[in-house]
Amino acid sequence: MRSAAGRTKKESIRPLKRAVAREIFRCLTSTVNVPGIADLRPLRQSRNITITAAVRYLGVWPTRTSDIEHGTRRLDDLTHAYRNWLQTA
Image 1 (cartoon, rainbow, N blue to C red):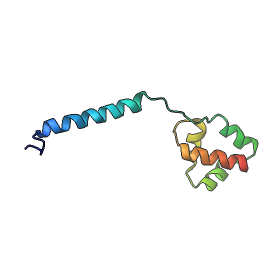
Image 2 (image 1 turned 180 degrees about the vertical axis):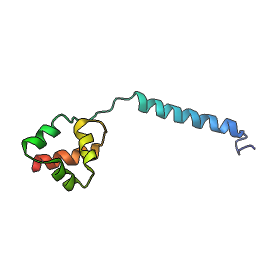
Image 3 (image 1 turned 30 degrees about the horizontal axis):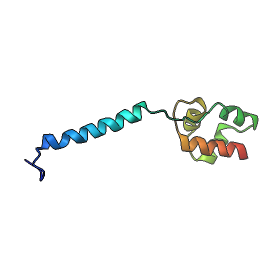
Image 4 (image 1 turned 180 degrees about the horizontal axis):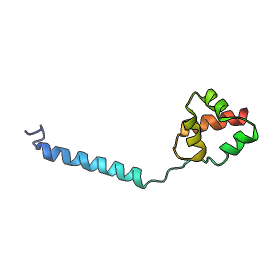
């Protein structure tokens, strides 16, 4: 099977694979800014807010809040919403 440019399927797929490989390499080697989390738990505790109250407000399971506070899972949008709520509570 040949394309309109006269290339075989194998010849057509090769540049696509290379483009995917370049994109993956960029993702793996680029620096990503990770939001700080060290202030979340002390801030929650200083305001006497329980995990239960936090998850009720955020509408998530308690494990998600724990994941954020311990840094075991990166959830940027939820972390941002959590921090904003803690600062205004």
